[in-house]
Length: 297
Image (cartoon, rainbow, N blue to C red; front, side):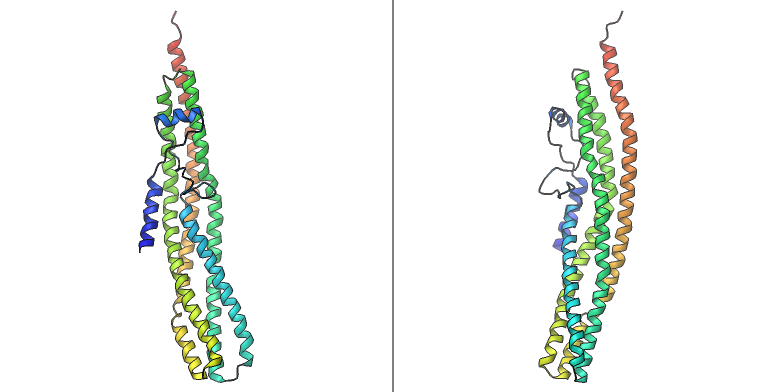
């Protein structure tokens, strides 16, 4: 419960926090003096290697889940191979029956887990499309700083605050829209990966118990072997349905992610259109200042 609360608290911070833009050049010093640029926080400890904060926490958990699935599949496939090798040499009926039931259960688990690997891969591929689109906010900062600097130089600093207000308003509004686009996806990605982690942890334990029971068959009576294996299978009987539920949840997450991508693309198109109008406003400010400074005849 504490783990989930931590992730949800982090989500709130990610969606609400407007970090101040770091000064890079003189133009950015002007920008910072009057306000922030609506960009994502520039804290290296929270940014991932691609510079995007909002996707980083769940990426780490998602990578862990991906590794767990790979390990579990390797364990299952290796032991299924061993059972297939051992069964022809197993003569006692009850012992052979137990190993056949173990084989059937472990094979089913391996087949049920495979689609989850594909789901995580699809989510990661879509993230790779989303990340560059969110990175465009860095270009917004440079654009705004350059425009503010031009107005400052052209108006001797008298209309700088006005230019900052206009560009900041544009970048803040569309920065919030980008956050809104990815917010639902982040929420569902967190929930999906927490559910997946919990299921995988339980599955690792119950799978290990079934393998241990199957391995122990050679050193116990056939009846005891069958009893131990069936008891272990009872502890794993809900796993296929749980994995199917996760697969459906993952498919829904993929749909939400596609919607997030579409929302981001729409937001960026509209930003580009409105930025043209903002640039005209800034040029009007310069023209208005020059006109006011021109001596009247």
